[in-house]
Image (spheres, helix red, strand yellow):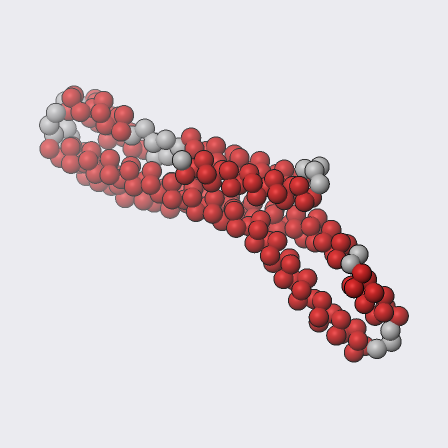
Length: 221
């Protein structure tokens, strides 16, 4: 998946402006073409949001892999060091009673699953919030682009004040996607450090959550 496609915000919006800047007399078809561009903007927006979701799904999958391959074994190791669990497990291992073994598993199993689910929520929830924050920002940019295009369409239809308005519309089309681009880069780096880093596992978990929270805060500034 190309992350760069997520941050290429509407280059096609320049088309009506090229018409404005190069033609003193506005072609009759220009307003219609600009109106069609408005429809394409919505289609491109949907495509970019889909790419964002695929990108974030990939990061969630990597976090899940880390959870099952690294955190769960560590959690199980620590759990069976607890005196009560250790004694119960030793007794079960030497017992011939299938009923006792089943009772132990049905008692411990749900507790283990509950802890796993809780830890997964701690790791996935920041990514979910980051995705929602980025999506809102991207949609805001497209809303602005549609509004600008609507203004251009009306402007083309009126065919007035072409030269005076050209620079103003060009400046309005400067969609600021730097924050989104940086957020995606930082999210990618945070997940990569979580799954490949050499730090202590508990330290990596805390660092990951802290970094994603920081990315979200910067996006909201």
